Image (tube, rainbow, N blue to C red; front, side, top):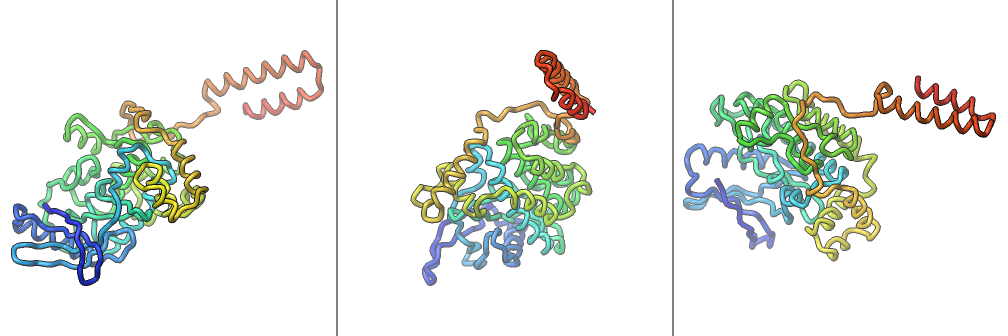
Length: 357
């Protein structure tokens, strides 16, 4: 629908991005979508949403003058493998904040995916491409029953061409977070139709089984965001942001921008000279330790599809493995006590009995 160029505003000596509607797409609907994207961006004032400077029509050309984002997409970064939980959570938190800002202005993005998220060389997250966004206060451009978006990131109501709202974007954010943490998308299929069926039925392998090292709170955030029924998801983006902030506030050992820059350096997206201009050696070493604990893309196991409703796997006291271990400990303790005749063993037996109860 459009081409994007890297340009220079000569008067201000400022780098910009020029998004031009290509001539082959200049029908009435494409023109309307392009103008609506510009109107949506013009109403945003948020550090995690790309800024619009101008909308210019010159001859047969129509183009937006946008903030130039110096960096690559999240999609490109994910090609190097899953992200450390802290990095994924920071990206998710900043996107949730951006969506909350857009939703407050009654704009639903409808196409949130890694290719529409950019990470600047300064460690900032930027949401872009509102080309299929829906303004709830304007007449719909999409006919009822028509699905709009990218298949693997679409919510069930979007797949079935039903009405969408803010919770539709939160489903897509859940898919994006799952992909960041697991290195693969939750909903796949041999065909688009099979993918749509899995989305509609809520069938995917739970995150804690694909990426067992993921902190429980992040597994819960993703699970809630991926609920098939909108009324079981987060009510709004601010709720999701609060849960992510709860994890981030306790897990981060450096600033979020510094963490993202360090991650970009570790993944070869930032030179050491560029990184050391803003980071200390200690911060780079900390990021290196996070990366070493993250599975590579080759080591991510692909497991069979399970229902989304499966509980998180945890050891249970009533499980066979637990009682087997308890009996083994009891036997060893009794044998040692019998051999040594020490007086401490009755206390230890009582402790083990309490553990079993």
